[in-house]
Length: 160
Image (cartoon, rainbow, N blue to C red; front, side, top):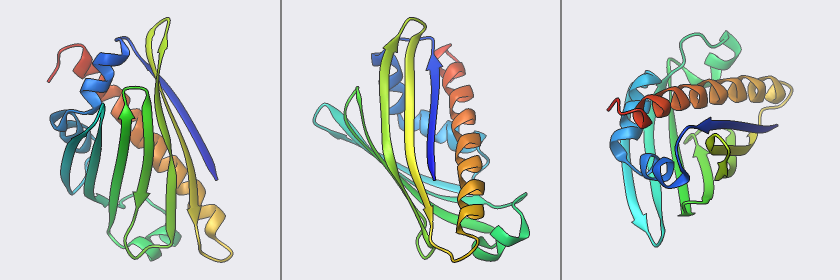
């Protein structure tokens, strides 16, 4: 299942890139997403950076069919490899779970400031119900991206 999510920040691409590369911003986003724990590492790499966010997420509110696979919490490792401030790749893995999430993230200058475009391919390899689980996962990812945007808007407005 494909997911494309685009949101706009009222700031230039360089400011949005700096925010995304700041571990303090990523910690604030994780807190707003109400994760159980997050171990965040940002490593400079050429003109870009590599982010690894190893987190444990709550599964509260998921249907019982999904909780059968996840339990009360789920482990996710989000890896972003930014080549430069224009964008890079995204990989979200869940050790021991039959999921694969890969894609890209890009920052584009727009009339309003900066558009961040996230495009992902979400796969859940479970016979018969994989499509339903993919749809649930896509909804969860969208919700988390919306939280990230809200935190980002506040961050860029000076709320740190």
